[in-house]
Length: 82
Image 1 (cartoon, rainbow, N blue to C red):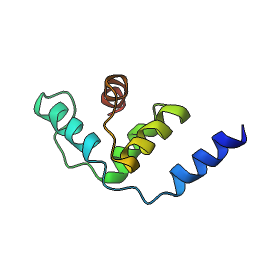
Image 2: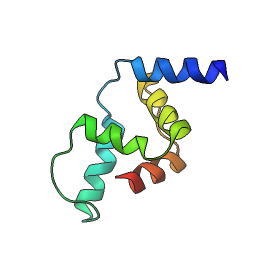
Image 3: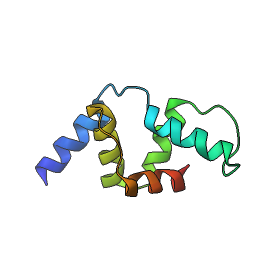
């Protein structure tokens, strides 16, 4: 339990870069007409990740901060969240 809390604190406190991976996904969804075509802020993109729940949210943030790509399952969940 302690390890999970430490991981959560680090992910929340981390100065995360712009969520380029999520933005690219959002742009594709906008071009397909699946979500409204309007500019989305970094905050809105990260907020969408919170919809996925605690563990997946941390996984997405951890992958973004480490410069790792999202898994197919995470991309699908992010698309649903958007």
